Image 1 (cartoon, rainbow, N blue to C red):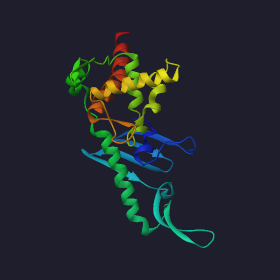
Image 2: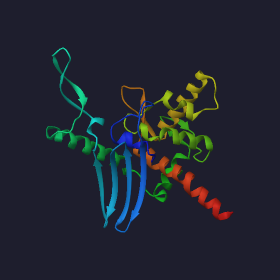
Image 3: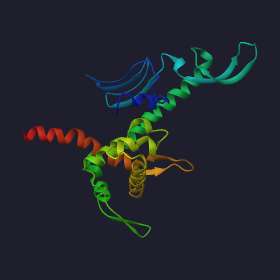
Image 4: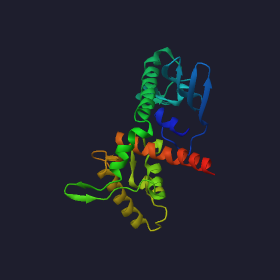
Amino acid sequence: MKCTDVFTFLGRKPSPRFQGEAVSDYKERPMGCRIKFRMKSNSIKMYDKYSVLRVETTINDPREFKIFGMVRHKDGSTSMKWKPMGKSIANLYRYAEICRASSQRFLDAMTDIVPVRSTLEEVGKVCSRKKVKGKNVAGLNVWSPEMVRIMESICDGRFLIYGFRSRDVSGKMHPEVRDGKKRSARTSRTLKKLRQHGLIRKISRTRRYQVTPKGRRIMGALIETRRRTFPEAAAQIV
């Protein structure tokens, strides 16, 4: 996970207008380990304390979140709309809703993080040819630089909640194709192939896609192996 994933956990979209810090930080202590994602003064952390795993969301600046309530306008009129949340006992229910949703998103992101060995059989299947609706679908070359780049593009944490569109990832998936129409067509063929192997799914009545639980398991393990295991093995050989 990246430090910018804290936007996703706290229900925000990354924006170039954002002014502040997004930080991830890991510490080991006598009673266990702690990982913390912080956006400005709000944070979400996970730690194990004497074999008990806990996830906590801390809100120090409630104005970073919205609450639905009455807003008084300059002309004296009022209306109900979403507004920045203030520090008030009356807003405690909203604090609880935000914290519960934030912790659940974090846990959902962690659900399919499993040891690499347990996904070997699934990896073998996506590398093999298969039949879909009577048509042959070629297997994926999961270790090719192009496929690794594709997996990293669609597994970006900012797509965890809302999914992604073809145009969101086409530039990173196929940067070598300069012609816009050709790149779009190639991206569509790639996404279709990933759907046929069950790594992504189409969100109904939209043009967005989401990574499936199977996709998170397989691609997460492959990306981790590519980033960490390969460099470590090469360093030992040298």
